[in-house]
Length: 82
Image (cartoon, rainbow, N blue to C red):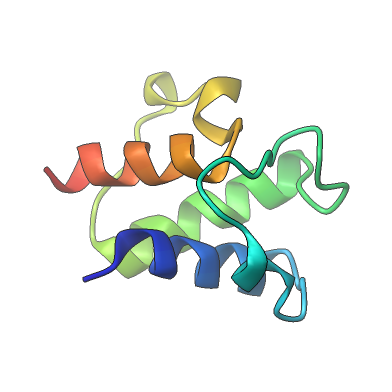
């Protein structure tokens, strides 16, 4: 499974980016760089990641650094799956 590709698909769906996320790479900034990624979108993103990958995210596992870039989010998901 290509985790980054899945994460980008989820970002695109949750934020309604219309395919823009396909052009993102690991260094693409997220939080603070995408106006669509507000606090409600973060919750939606986490819910979709939990659903798609079958893990549970505890409140104390999340901070802004998790959503800094595509790469940090992919690393987080990989760690949850690992």
